[in-house]
Image (cartoon, rainbow, N blue to C red; front, top):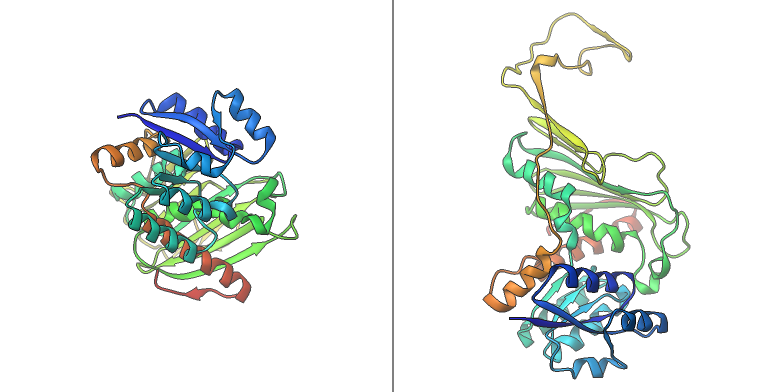
Length: 351
């Protein structure tokens, strides 16, 4: 079965949805778009789309099965609920809402209407994330206890509407929601502590350089960092486990695994080891024979799996991959991130 889709918000992300669906998703036809900005309307026309004059006109189009919402964050809730109540299935850009309460309302309407609602968490298909997921799932370097995940740039201020608080701007709701979604899929035990250091270096209104600290019930400790003013980057991922360490250096997915060798028993000698840091035994390099260096696993990823899953859910009653309840769990942690930063201390929880 083929489905017809309309896009609300035809800016950079909205037009990206259109182009990529056309390229990769044969079972979806992008029919039209709605946007209040003239330049976006002209872009939609040039891309061969019908341009709806009003929301009611779009909602009245019985050919439309799915609506993708790609507007600024503060307008998501009203658009999602209007589309659900008009009988449309909805894909919403992240974050679905600006707070957990609004998302709870959307989920209730989705259940009431029986229409599909999902959030476009495309970065679940990022290659760097999938590499780390494969390493941890395999157990080849044991149980993780430190996970560090970072995205870092050096261009300074947030761009466009993302620099305004009223629109739901800021780094927590931009990249933070992605990195949280990833680590909360890597570890599904409850989050028991949330801390945050949120800086507004270039903005008077929103956070633009941030660190988030998460602790899970099983003891795993996570640091998430997002920076717009970093000129020497840390690795994209650095994961320390009981039997080794994995590093993904960058978006190109350069990196390696260093794991304990089979004959890795360490015996302490009485002699002090002299290093560049001075005399030490604890921080001296391990003997070479006690470790083995391995390449990162090869993984195949394709963002198109997201929309393919939407089609499979609608056509075959398949399991939805990006579930509203997963998104709500992330939003509840985000709510605590802002509270923790305001309080200046980590907050205990059970999420």
